[in-house]
Image 1 (tube, helix red, strand yellow):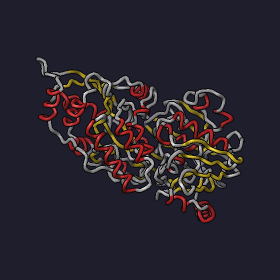
Image 2: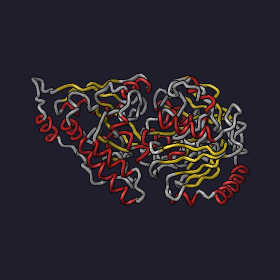
Image 3: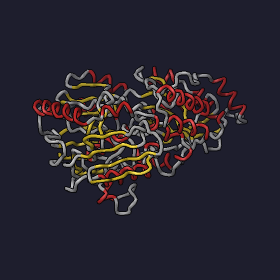
Image 4: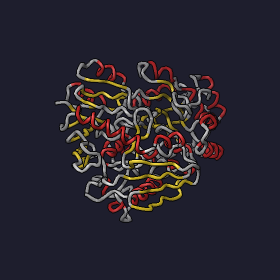
Length: 527
């Protein structure tokens, strides 16, 4: 916070932004349609109550947040033209723009900020993200003061991207449940684009907001987000020029193929804050998986090197814990669970699960997210013959779409599932949620769907979440990760090789730390 406090001085920051904006406006081409292709399909478009890329990409175009972050992890003004942090770190004052309006013409006020903070705190799967908030004061229409019960090192980051969309209180404050509010399908925000049409499973159509609070933007007239059945059909559409941008490319064959197209740029920039981890999650309430020894046995039976090298062509990297390599909070010395079938079999014997006549001990189902097949379906199918080697029969259960998978997992109606979960820049935002006892929630995907609970881990995470000293904070996270990895509520597999492929006619491609999960008001398309 002390670092960001200096950066928040409004006059210097705003002066530089105005100058930069003038240069961009002179070079950028106005007009045109950007077609984005995605395989993940949103249930609705309100990021305040739903995490994930499917909701975040359109949601950050419709809704604006107090801050935005650049590619160097520096906070920049957005709905808040300036901000300040108190000396004790227990309050942040946001000074809102006076010209910001929602798409229905109503002004954005501090009351909307206060309402949105409370809505996210109460409903978002990242429960720890705003749990320290005590209250939000609104001394006038353009000033919001957020008070914290304890220090919150991730607070400014949590006010960007899809994490704190500012909702119109006059729409969402009618007493209806925000998770099922009818406005979620055609939301009213203050972002650079207005929702025109949402056909679930097919597309989202967005048009330029003519009253956007940043003059001269957005440059594009329209964004169409088309939803594809799988990455192969989407990559083909990009190759043929039918789609301008394909974010979150995970299939290594697609990355290699698209890099050969002279009309495309392919980059791994734009994912710094994402921190994606591919893992196998266990329902710890399952009669077999409730035993740590069974979970450890499965972890020892998975050949992560084979997955990374053979299935992913060396593009991905092994993961060994909740925090991704490269993060200052990464724990390099945790148990790695290298392939050891003898140890796996011994653990299962010790747990009392003897093999029957055909060599089977018991049967488990494994689910996976439909869409990123190489990272999900392929590994789920690999588990079937691999776990058979230690006497576990595996049934691979497909889901027709993302909502079906999410309903099963968030309803705790699964044995094991492949999953992709993000660190979201800071452990307070993206890591705590998976392991906190009080975040075991019904119907909320990417909460603690494993039903894992260890009060010692809760205590360590609570300490780390308020520690201002970076070295002490990192040490606390290493301690927590050591316990989590030993108890194996999750078998960590690999990090994802996210890339964005886009037409070379696209200017100002999204390479901030949030990539396409940030406003695309600066993106343009050459004619």
